[in-house]
Amino acid sequence: MNYIVFDLEWNQSPDGKEAEHPLLPFEIIEIGAQKLDEQLVPVDAFHAIIKPTIYRKLHPCTREVIGITEKELKQGKPFDEVGRDFLNFCGKECTFATWGPMDLTELQRNLYFFQLDNPLPFPLFYCDVQKLFSLAFEDGKTRRSLEHAVEVLELPLTETFHRADHDALYTARILKLIQPELIKSHFSVDYYRTPNSKKEELHLHYPDYYKYVSRKFTGREEAMADKTVTALRCNVCGRALRKKIRWFSGNNRVFYALAECPEHGYVKGKLRMKKSDGNTVFVVKTVKMTDAAGADKIRGIQEEMRKKRKERAERSEN
Ligand SMILES: [Zn+2]
Image (cartoon, rainbow, N blue to C red; front, side):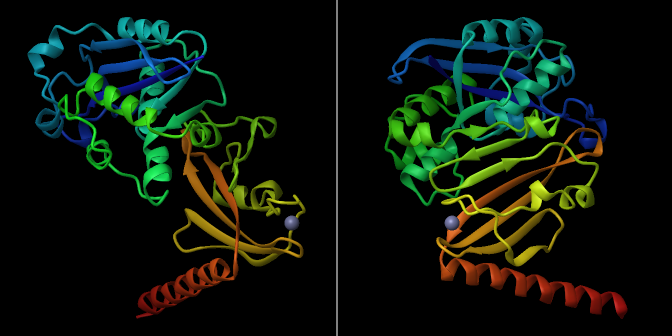
């Protein structure tokens, strides 16, 4: 099994959001990748520039950071050719590794748009090196730029940033510095394709938390009426718990809840409502064990949300 550490550069509508293609907000213009063996030793590399067909002119921001000219892009190969070459390079079985979750999503969106088969498995587990860097070297929560990580780890600055092949190389070097046990116990799951049925829903058990990814619902109300969505179980013994604080939300997208296992203590739940295709939503729920201080924190958030709601209500009355 190989690791494919890859990075994409993409362009977006240079004439603003109104001129954007609704099915392709980001058009890939460069793919760079490192193939690593199981010991994370580089064994092969991939690099290609893509001739854009939707946004031929560079967005000013893209132009500023990337250092590719429109002339170079014109000499690139079409996406369907490069996409096919890249998938062949990846091989049938590989583990993808990227800096953050966006590259896998945009790769699949471009494959779909340019009518190439999506051969990636479902569910798609991958290494989010940005998350792993945070877990290994920082607080585990903050997401940093690739430049920041390279600087913190004092890696040699052999390449410029924001070129796909260079960024893939740096990402591979960072991955090599992360404990194999941490990599293997903290796989991320891709959300480009989400479960289509109850049977496909994901129940993922990590060392320090449980994650659930739901099927699609017509909206927030339908999702919150589902027993599996709202259930809270103890991560240690698995028993279903009655909630001490029922799911509450301030902004309709993130919900919190609190329960207590008689044997193992407090359990906190966080639920994120995410947009899926065609106005549907899906839910990502994470459940963690916590202590009295953690429970107080949830109560604090609830109190704050109540206050905000009250203020809003008073404002609208006036
Ligand atoms: Zn328990």
